[in-house]
Length: 85
Image 1: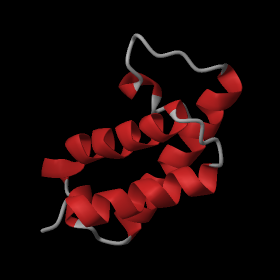
Image 2: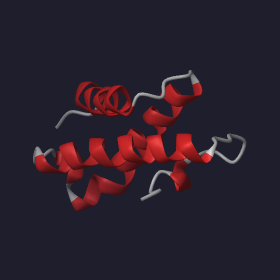
Image 3: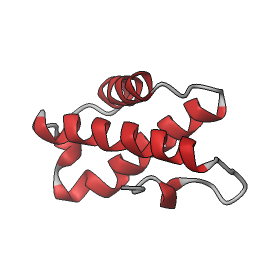
């Protein structure tokens, strides 16, 4: 479940509860991207785009956001707005 952990910078620490929240948000966001047939989910782009999504969620969490739905929706919106076909 903690697929976001590899993207957390080594100088950043979150408690286990926050890691679970971030992981839930990350998995939800990526699922939405995959099921939308977004070009970002194509195999050639998927790893890099997953990192973009993860880092956006982590950045929001570092600013204090802990609501999984907000984290997930913001990451999907960020990707859609900044990485177009």
